[in-house]
Image (cartoon, rainbow, N blue to C red; front, side):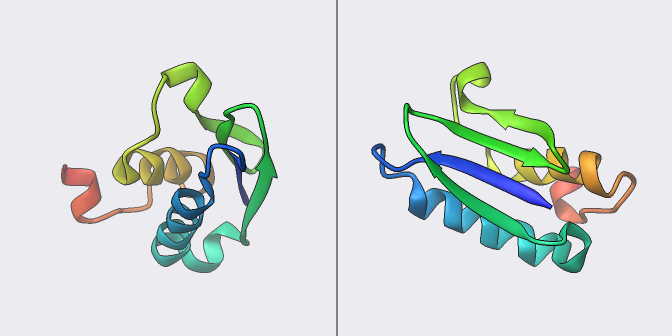
Length: 88
């Protein structure tokens, strides 16, 4: 299961929904689902099976989608081939 916690005041729902769509398209049933969790305070965090895989606060930026897919893959499906995403 992947959880994307995003700041509603910052208007990050569209970005979060797009990232959820990308993750579901790449990993399908292997994820068990993606939850969008509204929050506040400028938060943008992604957790995979409870493990924090991306924090905007820690990195100072949003992930590129290829970075996020790699981070989720490493937490949920280690060794899964991401095709062209792995070669970028």
